[in-house]
Structure formats: C-alpha cells, structure tokens
Length: 169
Image (cartoon, rainbow, N blue to C red):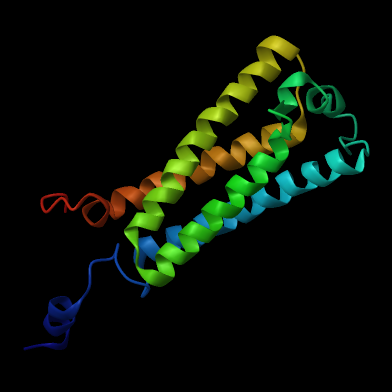
C-alpha cells in the first residue's frame, strides 16, 4: 500500500471535524463576518442609548432612518436585535465547530435566514417608505447577506449530519 492510498483510505470527509477543509474555513469566515456585523450593530446600539448623533459623514441620512418608527420593534432598538443576532450566530458557529455539533450550525443558519429576511424588509423600508439610506444599515445588510450565504454553504456541506440523510453525500 502506498502512502497516497493510505492517506486516501484514512481521510475524513472535509465537511466534518475540526481538522480543516472547507467546513473549517467556512466556519472561521462565518464567525469573522458575524463579528463585523456585531461591531456595526453594537456601535448603533451604543449611539442609540447614549442619545448621540451617528457619524455618517454626510453619507445618507442615518439620523432620520434610526429615529424613525421602524428603528424599534416593541420598544427594542433594531440595532440591539441585530447585535444579539450576530453574537448568537458567532457563538453557535464557533461551538458547532468545537463540539462537532451540526444542530448548533443549523440553529445559526435559522437565525441567519430570519435575520436576512428582516434585513431585506428593513432595506425595503429605507428605500420605499422612508426614502432615505443609512450607510450603517447598508453595511449591516451586506454583512448579513454574506453571513447567510456562508452559513447556507456550510449547512449544505454538513447536510447529512444536520438532516441525517444517508444519500446526501
């Protein structure tokens, strides 16, 4: 038996484990993206509670968007909801990778899907109802789209573990 055939015989599927491959890379990318989103949402949350102006540097109308009735849901700032969502996804993906737990990964994907849909709704509100753009909201929507895409790809790679489908590979 040659070294290459022994390596092929003993290899683990790329989507599993902590060793490497696309699953590990995508997990790292997803956590990094979520942390970027967490930074943006945390900034907007702090500014909201500190009653300080948002630093938009003349790009868009952040103050108008973030002081509109759409900036809160049941009295909770949308930015805070975003920060919690990003933090939950980062934690779930990191734990899914560390524990090799596909259920946590699926949970992160569900949060990402709901957050992506809500983000698209808020983008619609900005463009069609408020007729104003907040640059931070656009950044957050872009980050959420990238995170949803990364988690969708990761969930696809680990679909057999998530859904128990023997023929998925």
